[in-house]
Figure (tube, helix red, strand yellow):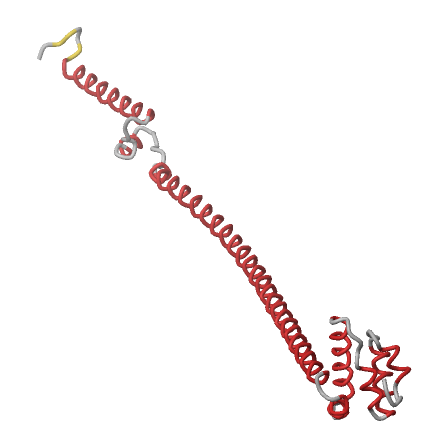
Length: 222
């Protein structure tokens, strides 16, 4: 084998091969450092022979998962916060609905009470109107009778009914511009009954002709 400068070719080839291997390993390590490739764990036995320890890649290998887990954790926390907010709003809405329902119920009760009062008032008005019409008819009938028969009818009534009929009679006479026959009826009644009715009429509500009635009660004629 030819030699160059006293050194054999074989040693030079070995040196060149070692140099190529060293350069290759150095390049791989450099590329790994740059993040282009990952050969440290693959070549870790060889690197340990030359005193180089490959750094642990467990953390690097788990980094994508940790980031994803962190994202998921934040999303879960955001969802939990959103759920709490929605729950709080739902409770507030339910409370408002309960308050509104209570107010509506109170309004319904007020409307029912008002309707009952209005009905009662209308019933009272109708009863008053019916009684007024009945009293007017009774007064008209008595005015068309013989005075003695009319007084007999009146004496058979209660004091309040007599008073109401006499008032209706006064009103009819005033409406027709006539003299009321009430004083004559009272004069035909028993004296004590006529006096009692006259006192009640004056005490409750004086009407047309009543002052004269008190003075003529118990007399024998109009």
